[in-house]
Structure formats: C-alpha cells, structure tokens
Image (tube, rainbow, N blue to C red; front, top):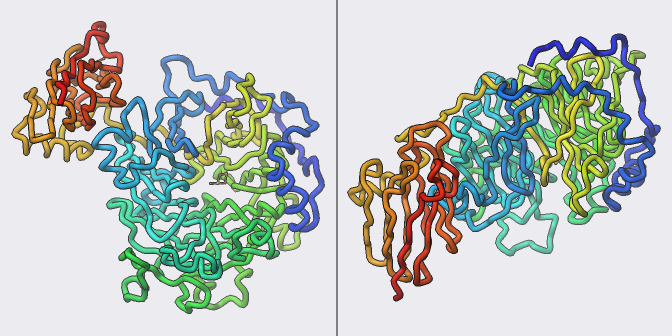
Amino acid sequence: MSDKHNDDKPAGKPAVNKGRRSFLAGSAMVGAAGMVGVTGVAGVGALTRSQPAKAASNGNVADIHVPPGELDEYYGFWSGGHNGEVRVYGVPSMREIMRIPVFNHCSATGWGMTDESKRIMGDSHRFTNGDAHHPHVSYTDGSHDGRYLFINDKANTRVARIRLDVFKTDKMVTVPNVQAIHGLRLQKVPRTNYVFANGEYMIPQPNDGRDINDPSKYHTLWNAIDAETMEVKWQVMVDGNLDNMDADYTGKYAAATCYNSEGAVDLAGKMRADRDWVTVFSIERIEQAVAEGNYMTIGDSDVPVVDGRKASGLNVTRYVPVPKNPHGLNTSTDGKYFIAAGKLSPTVSMIEIAKLDDLFEGKLDDERDVIAAEPEIGLGPLHTTYDGRGNAYTTVFIDSQVVKWNMEDAVRNYNGEDVEYIRQKLDVHYQPGHNHATLAESKDADGKWLFSLNKFSKDRYLPVGPLHPENDQMIDISGDEMVLVHDTPTFAEPHDAVIVRRDQIQTKQIWERDDPYFAETIAMAEADGVNVETDNKIIRDGNKVRVYMTSVAPNFGITEIPVKQGNEVTVVVTNLDRIEDLTHGFCVVDHGVSMEISPMQTASITFTADKPGVFWYYCNWFCHALHMEMVGRLLVEPA
Ligand code: K7E
Ligand code: CUA
Ligand code: CA
C-alpha cells in the first residue's frame, strides 16, 4: 500500500454536522429517552433510521485492494467476543489470516483437547466458553514490541497471553477474588511488566456464601498481573465497580470507569446517581503499600490486596466524578489525557494526566480540577480512538456515528473560547461499540485507517436468518474527511481490536525443537526413554498406554496401536517435516480426538479407548498427494 490513496479526496474544509438529532439537555433525559429505549427494544434505533443505508459509502474500493500475492501493511487482532478466540486480519485488505483459539475449544487445532492446551488452561479447561473483549499488544517505551498479546475473558474471569512469535496462547490465569474480568490494558512505559485488569462485578469478599443478601458488603478489585509469569501480583479494593480502563504513557497512572458507584444490584439503582466516577490508580503508591506490607488477603488467596476505597486513607486511588454511567476509557496517544466516554451523557470527560501528581499530593481543591474539558459529542458515546494529529474519534451508539473532534479545540471551548471542536460526524451501520485506528494504542498512531465495530448489521449483508453478523466498517481517516471504504461482517462478537505494523511482529514459520510450548511432553518422553525425533514406540504402564510416533508426509511412524478396552491412551506425534506450511493432523474416528501438528512440533492428546473394535486414525490436515492414505488403526481388544 502507498499513501497515494489520499490524492483523489475532495479538497477543502469538511462540513460540520452537529447531528441529525439535537442533543438532549440532561443526562437523565438521555438515559430515559435514548439508551434505555435502545436497550429495552434492541435494534429499534437501527430499524427506524430514516437515512438510506447505501448513501454513506462513497469510498474508493481500489484504495483497500491488496493484489493477490502482495502482503498487507498491518496486522489487525480482533477479539472474538463470546466466541472466545482472537482473529487475525491483514489490514487494509481485511483478509482473515488466522484464528487463535483462547478461551474456546477448537475442533481444528485441538485447543482444549491436547495435553499441551489443557496444561495451559489449567482448571478452567472444563469451561468450553469464554467472552473475550480486549486484545492488546505488549509495549516497550510506548511502542508495540510484538512479544505478546493479552486478552480478557469476562465469562470465566480469566486473562490469557498469546505468543506473537507462534500465534499460540501460552499462558492463562483465573483471577481470584473477582468476577468477570472486563477492562484490560497493559503497562506501556518503560515496558509491559504489568497487565492491568478490571473485575467488573461487585461480590462479597470472600465470596464463600457470606453476605449474599447484603450488597452493601460487595466489592470488586483492580488487578495487576505479571506479564512474564502471568501470576497475579496484587489487587486493589475499590468503591463502586470497574468497567473499562487504560494506562498512561508515564508508567505512573491508570484509570478505570465506574458505572455503578451506587453499588446497586438492579438496573434502576445503577442509574440513580447523577454522577459516577473515573477511578485513578497511582501504581507507585500501590507498589509502595505492597512493599510496606500495608495490605490484606482474602479467603484462600495469598495475593496482596491493597485497600483503595475512599475511606481507607491510603491515598492509592482517587475518584474523579464524571457524568453518570461512563463506559470506554482511552488514553490519548499524545499522552495528555484519559478520555472517558459518557454513555448516558452526550459528553466525554478529558482528564489531564499532568495534573494527577497534584491530585494525589492534595494540591487541588476538588477532584474535578483535573477535568481539562467535557465536550458534547453525540448520543451514547462509548469509545474513543486517535489519529496522532490531535484529533479524537468517538463512537456514539445511539446516533450510530463516528464523531471526529479536535482535542485542543475542545479544551479551548471548555475554557470559554468560541471555537468549534467537532470536525465531522460520519454515519456507521449500525450502533458502534469500540472503534480503533491504526497504531492508536501506541505513541506511533499514524491516522490512516479507522474501524468502527458495529453491533448491528441489519440490512448490510445477505440475510442469514435471525442471528446477524456484526459489521466492522473501515474508514479512511488519512485526509481531512473520514470516508467509509469497506464493510467486513464478523461473527459474535468483536468488542475491540488492535492494529500494529507488520514489521512489529516477527514470527517463526516452523517450530523450534526446544520450544517451551511442548517441553513438558518432551520431558515425559525422556522419562520413558524415548527420543521423539527418532523413536516410534509404544510404552505400556499399567492401564496407561503412551504412543510416541513421528509423522513425515505421507506416513505416521506407527500404523497399528494395539490396546485393551479401558486403557487411557496418550498419543504423542512429532512432525519431522521441516517444510513451511506442512502441517499434519491426528484424528481418531468416533473418539472426539483431533489435533494439529505443525512443522517440527510435538503435540499430544489423551483419551480413553472405551469401545472394543477397530478404529481408524487419520491425518486431517491436507499434507501430500497421498494425504488420504496417511492413516493407521487403533486395535481395541475387549476387556
Ligand atoms: Cu465497550 Cu467490553 Cu470494551 Cu464491548 S466493551 S463495546
Ligand atoms: Cu499428513 Cu495429511
Ligand atoms: Ca451509575
């Protein structure tokens, strides 16, 4: 891709569109008339739109065309939502390159079935579902370093790490003392040593059956996970709940939105207060409290929990009041602001990070003194992204738009100057959640492409029955005006995405034999006196049978596995083909056993041979002209 896609843009100043609907005056009105209407009768907002759906697309399709054989400029990592996986796209072509199973189980790769994946998933392997929202690529000095991608699981309170040299999940932790990990962000500076994660829902502490009928005793925690070991290092107990969050570009602060300062357990209660807050965390002060032993532990967990509630007096947190029920929180890529989206308020709140030292040192009269501006954006602001040129782009769910606005003009306007800060409002289709621009979670934001991740696709695709895909729309933001250029349908449900330059990711195209991913399996082989690269051997150990075999297209090293009914059989396959892209599979018919073995990989899977008879096993990744013949027999003698 070149930059020439700018050339045929209309010149001149873009028209400022204040919106099809006039702003409602108070946030309570917005709550009652807007958000609740849409959530109460989902999709009605979209269905009653008067604007023709086709009118907005005036893009040049050639701009995003990556010719066959050419490579994309960016990797886009898309969350797979309640599908539990991560999907990898080439940007700008939006060709889906890979899917990385994480919190789900995968029929093709064997994730959730193989012994290696079960070890990584730990006890939580029993869950076959997940709800992934927030994928983020690790940093060094505020730039993506391509080592890891981290992602949350709201459904089963987990955080996982993906190695970006092999695009495989390699660590997973279930966070104790909290329920539903939602907001997740990484330390950006000096590098990603911490993964920060919000526990969204408030629960009794400990949650062992006590206080179930006393919501006033429910609390949640903000969590810091060691990015290398993936152990929870410490937690911070807060007032209210925690929704979305981000970290700053100094390494000192992080901030999270709270929509339930009321501590309510019902919908009306969560909207009762006129204001909720943004909780600001001082990472240094929390670390100091932990170092000084100024913490508690909860239940069986030995993770240090620092009390960050207002009444604790520890001064590790501050609560900045913002209009009711905020949602997204995104650090501007110039490092100046935490920007919290108002959701039930048509505003976003800009928190000036340079003022946070004074806030914690007690030099400000009021928490609200850190607010640099609170511009009106539109109805239902949810998330904000950046172009690196001083502009922010906020999704407005109810108005179904992406709103481009200028941050410094918003500050000037807030300070009484008569300047317009809204640059453009672009219709999207329909009801956007997150949006995300290229490199826009790093200091390298380049303002080329923006994606609006829309919750409803309604009429944009061929009908497929009652369940619709989501619609991720690609917008060219390189010029003065945003131009919609492409629709990509996506399956349930990308909340968020992260887009990095292709040179920021360095992959291995075949496995290295000493890779830790299968080191435990190799250790098991060595304990059995087996060299997996040279030996084809069956080890019998009481009721257990361990089968070690190689695969070289189109042959398995062992083609007959005699066992007794009831044996627990572990099959370890080592793919000795050194050729890029030559993956074998191992699938036992009628046993629910299937896995991938990529070049120079060792993979293993364990199952019970519970039925007598002959069962064919076969290679299920097409590898060779004689792939169909790459088979063997499991011979199960009746007990
Ligand atoms: Cu807005 Cu989970 Cu980031 Cu969905 S959250 S949209
Ligand atoms: Cu080996 Cu197909
Ligand atoms: Ca609230």
